[in-house]
Image (cartoon, rainbow, N blue to C red; front, side, top):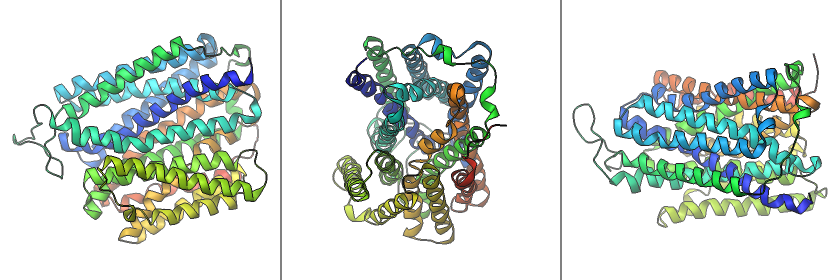
Amino acid sequence: MKKNSYVGPLVVVTGLFFMWGFITSMNDILIPYLKKVFELNYFEAMLVQFSFFGAYFIGSIIYFFISAGKGDPIMKIGYKNGLIAGLLVSAFGLLLFYPAASLKMYGVFLSALFILGLGFTILQIAANPYVARLGSPETASSRLNLSQAFNSFGTTIAPVIGGYFVFHYFIKWGKPFLNTVGEPITLNSGEVISAYGVQLPYLIFALVFVLMAVIIKLSNLPAINTENEIPKGFGALKYNHLVLGMIAIFMYVGAEVSIGSILINFMDEAFSIGEMQAKSFLAFYWGGAMIGRFLGAISMGEIKKAIKKYSLMLIVSITVFFVIFGVVWVESNFAFKFSSILPYTGFMLLNLIAFRIGNSLPGRTLMVFALVNIVLLIIALTNSGQIVLWSLLSIGLFNSIMWSNIFTLAIDKLGKYTSQGSSLLVMMILGGAIIPIIQGSVADAAGVHFSFIVPLIPYLYIAYYGWKGHKTAKT
């Protein structure tokens, strides 16, 4: 197949990265919604992330044992059928939001999220290696960074568009939810909450996923036969840098999700910023990951001249920032002021400096970014006022390259065990289930502000992995 013929399939699969990023980030909108409806404490509210990301672990460990015993299932049925299966399972989970809201049962919501997470597990296991194989091995990292950047675009606009659907547009439809004393449940802005607030948006998402499954079915995606490369057994676990990388993925996903999940509630509690405005600020937390991933693709790419590379990174950084601001500005009916987000630009400059210190080396860049996040968390924990808000929002900029760098370092030199190692790394998205409920418990016991001490430990470990833990070794 000619090189140019991969462009179409890459565009189609990158669309999947965008959609699962969008839906994943919608959990940050869902948490404050369900917290209001079911009058939950922070620990109970974080069960949303526990159910969703816990499915990654359950699904991946089942997949791993099947792969070890009988060979890789997706390699046998083909990437195309694997992607379709993941989309249809995800669509079924999304459809369950309708009866969950009708019955007003938190357990059904959690079950729907678990099934949705299982679908995303299949998509992750199929899509990541497929993108890497759509072209030459030398440019695999660049393609994965690009797809991940569009995944971040989904996580960026979800708080804005999804938040508008849930907290403003559909929430006005239908009968209001009532609290335990029979009174209508309202947002902090005074708007009454109804079941349609989540039923209709998630019904639309389900239809989109079914449509994407049809598109992929009709698409001419190239078949990549690699079944002979997939050994049986547990050979991947012999590599120390993979095992340590699994822990690093656990820590990264857990810290990123935990911070994003509680930011809306923190902005309300600490700064009296209501849900509608808070979701706009949250877009810059997730948008930071998009900015950083586009920059990472350039930094780790083929451009050798420093002036050309960093000039391009500066231009891309500014461009993507204004794209994010434009989306937020339009959605807010032109009420969101540029001056309100101006301090964020200083942290964007810090991000460029951190890339320069990383010097295009994946391990060093990972360590530098983790250390910056540690400093930002310490600043947030030991201060009050706007510096706390901007420090927390800017962590997204430095989360950006962590998935791609950890993933690449962890599967380095695995040879025939590369696919098995990839499934193990996807399994450790479990961190997104565990660490948020730990932070939720700390928030209940000691306050939301103090709970940001929890992500410090993950970033300390990630800094270690970037420093020494990624060094390839086999036991």
